[in-house]
Image (tube, rainbow, N blue to C red):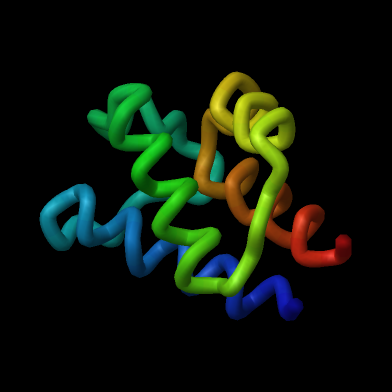
Length: 83
């Protein structure tokens, strides 16, 4: 799985959640961008589906707790794509 493709998918869906806003930095806090826990969970599940990935529940829980930026999400998705 290519890093650029994962980053593009994260940005595309995150931009939709932010109602078309795409000027955010990869290291910007998802919470500061206006997302709550439910939004982040929806984002994770959507990206897994779009990228054809399956994470174990424990991995998803870890990601919910530790993924605070778009960059974190991309790294996690690349990591589970290696399994």
